[in-house]
Amino acid sequence: MEDVTDPSFRYVCKHYGADVMYTEFIASDGLIRDARKSLKKLELFEYERPIGIQLYGHQLNSMVEAARIAETAGPDLIDLNFGCPVRKIANRGAGAGMLCNIPLMTEITAAVVKAVRLPVTVKTRLGWDENNRNIVEIAERLQDAGIKAITIHGRTRAQLYKGSADWSLIGEVKANPRLKIPVIGNGDIISPQGAASAFDRYGIDGIMIGRGAVGRPWIFKEIRHFLDTGELLPELTLAEKVELARGQFVKSIEWKGIPAGIYEMRRHLSNYFKGLPNFREIRLKLVTSMDQEEIHTLLDRIIEIYN
Image (cartoon, rainbow, N blue to C red; front, top):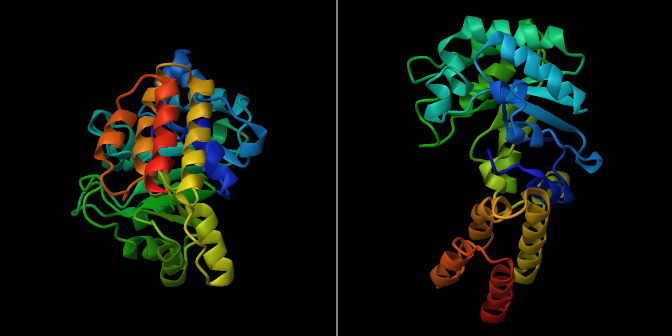
């Protein structure tokens, strides 16, 4: 979710009821070198709370020092990413690459827990590949290292984001009588019914939504309403979606400036309007234009054409 869960996106997610949020993940090496982009990601806002700063890396000393720096930014928790499957990260042993070195993963986790006063949590996957789906053991070892919660994505690193998430192993972790910390499930939750089923079938303590909220940040409100009432909320109108997209676009530019604020908003703009017929021409302009006013005009045209 790098370049996705920035403050502009977190703003709309919080508006629609996200209970806990996380920053984009931050490279520990970049943070301790005072890299500008890494330091920028430490910016937090009071309305976002509770919020965690997520770190990744593969060297113990760097992860410990980065956690100490992150703590000074005032988050509510520190989260360690041992789940990112991207090749350039995993192949150097960070993110999901840690699944190939469980002793080091445990050592780093224990060292970070000892180094900071905040709660430390972990996000990871079922294992490296189909022959190493060892998340039950991993969760126990991370609990022993001192984490306060674990989030599990229901795929192996080898799967990347292909196929369907396997929640059965997430359920096994939760059912393990030795595990006392909260277990949060992640993967393929794209509807209120899917969220309710995950709670009912696997007994998890929470769900994490990532890609399912891109272009649909109101999913958090939909899920909460369905869990509380058993009823589905009406779909947002097209005009409401346009104004939501516009508001996020404005905040993206406020926070990142130009051109970054436009570049990194493109995936959101294209996803807000999925399913509109004959949308290809406008979509292409939305994701290629570098002119703020043109993008605002295109958003106006969507209402004119489709309402």
